[in-house]
Every structure is written in structure tokens, then in C-alpha cells.
Amino acid sequence: MADTATPDIVICEFMDQAAVDELARDFSVHYDKALVDRPDELARLAAGARALIVRNRTQVRGALLEAGARLEAIGRLGVGLDNIDLAACKTRGIAVLPATGANDIAVAEWAIATVMMLLRGAYHASDEVAAGAWPRERLMGREVFGKTLGLVGFGAIARETAIRARALGMAVVAHDPFVAADDPAWERIGARPAGLDALLAGSDAVSLHVPLTEGTKNLMDTARLAAMKPGAVLVNAARGGVIDEAALAAALKAGTLAGAALDVFETEPLKAGTALAGCPNLILTPHIAGVTAESNVRVSSVTAANVRRVLKENRP
Image 1 (cartoon, rainbow, N blue to C red):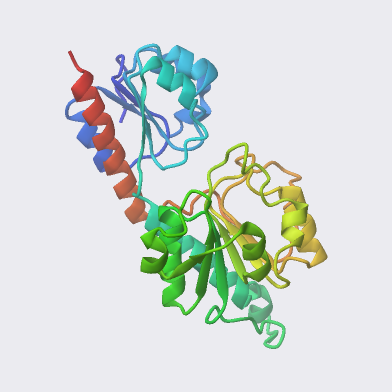
Image 2: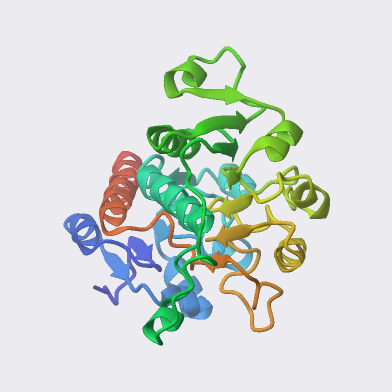
């Protein structure tokens, strides 16, 4: 739905319609999920808005943030905030509102499902089988039972992933310098802390759960990919840029890494000619790990409630 007058709230990426309608009961709302691709129009609408609701594609910085002179809130339909100029928002007193916890289960399920697919290795032969081939021996993969899952980061999503891995009979180790060794979460979830080098060397599957910062940029570079256990697989639904994509492509093509799955990329969407094209045993998904029918409802509801609270509190 779109209000052509000056809107209170501009929503420029997809959101559950029920949450949009809930906001529209008390505020003027302009909802256009394709608006992210029309930056000039988005900036014009943001100029009079009190709140902007985005996902990860909208870059809330520079010209857009300057245009939004009346902004009081940025609702984030998700949890990552690297597309938002947090320092500028803080200076201007703009509340930045992630939907914390609302898509944890969706991401955790994606991580576990892709680890299982990569280790089993039986899902890339549909055309062959349909044509009458029967490559059973070549497609003999591995079980996750008894394997070790290494989690780089041990926040909420990583913990949900660990719970599911433990239920499948996996051992879980995690590296997170911000979680103390005596934190009760380790024992509660059944994981043990490890240094990054030890984790990479000993894990059959590694899942990344860290934000994109100066310290995590290209965290998985040529050297760290080479340090992984022979036959290991790597999955990333955290943030693009944490993996050096060219180094990952080289490791997959050389066979030093058995497989990988990426849901996030340094540049989204990927450009033609990406180094990732043609890599063996590589699964690519379009930043969708945290988006399911159920999580979209939760994320949208939480974001709508967050934005409503700020606008109601700040209303004269």
C-alpha cells in the first residue's frame, strides 16, 4: 500500500502485509518493496518521513540519511546493521531498531540443512539420474553423526545452530572472544570453547556467525581456508566480506576444501563473472537464510512494534 502524501513511515523492502496494515492504523505509510531500487524517489519520500523500514539492501547512509532530516527511527527487518551508518544515527538521535531474535531459528535451520547437504553430497545429480545414470558409488557421502561442528561466533543464532547439531549427534566447538569460558551457556548447550586455529583444524564443518567489522573482514582468507581440516565444509549466513570469495573459489577448485554454502556476499546481488561461478560442491542462496514464511511474520511484527513504540513516545 502507498500513501502519496508525505508519509510518516517509508518501507522500501518487503514486509509482511499484516504488519504494514497494523502500522497504517495510526500512521501514514508508504510501502513499496521495490523502492530500494529507485534511490532518488526513496530519498524524496524519506525527506518528510519520521521512520524508515529497511532490510539489508538499503544503504542508510550518505545522501539518503541526509535527506531524512525528520527521521526518528530506522526499523531493520533483520539483525545485521552494517548497511546503516550507526555513528551518524547516534549523533542525530535516530533510534536504530533491529528485529533481534526474530529470525534466529530460520538461520540456524539453514546452516544445519546446508551442512547436511554438503557432507552427504547426494543432491547434485538429478539430471543424471533422470537420464538413466545411477552414480551411487560417486555419491556416497558422509553422515553428520559423530562429526564436529565449529561455530565462529557464539551468539544467539550460533547457539540455536548448536542445539540442532547436538540433536543430530554432532560435537560442537565454538570460538568467541566475547563469551567467557565460564559462561553457563557452554554447559547448557553442550558446546566447548576453542581457539580459532584449533577450531578450524579439528572441525568437519564450520559455520560463521560474526558481524562484518574491521576485525572480521576477510577472516576466512587463503591461510585460514588452508588451515581447515581436510575434507571439511564451510557455510556462511552471517555477512558477506567475512570470507575472501576469490580465496574460497580457489580452495574449492583445488579440492582443499570439500564444499561450501554461501547465503551472503561481499556485493549483493553477485555480479556476472564472479569468482564463485563454476565452483564444485558450492551452494549459493540469495541472502535468504533468515527469511522463511514464519520468520518474515515475526521479523515484520517485531519491527512494526519497535517503530510504533518510538514514534508514539516521541510524538508531541
